Image (cartoon, rainbow, N blue to C red; front, top):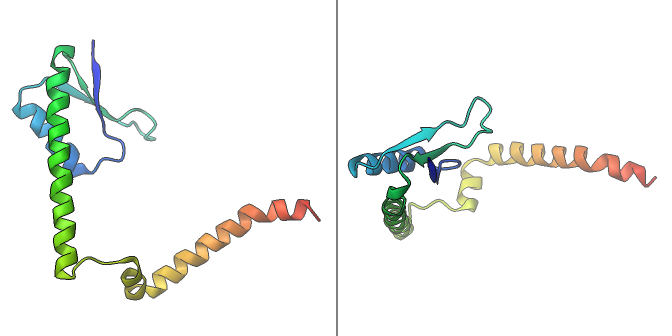
Length: 121
């Protein structure tokens, strides 16, 4: 019987591709279930052979640990080089976009809260 190995919801494409390649290279038999047309099905990698679960899980855990370290190192390097963009810098680079998004958020909050405020009157 198939066993769930790795959920692909909210996983970056490059990470999912790397994990698929890792499993293929290690000759671990798996298949992928799609998210479906509306994205409500479980998009995941499944093992055909449950006996390979511990090996596959260990490979994925090691890959994710290495990936996490690599990305943290890249972010630290960007900060050291002054290339890492902070929230304030993003706002200052795109002030019109920030104002439009803020206005939209405030409008949605107003629409959401207004019926409750009118109940009390």
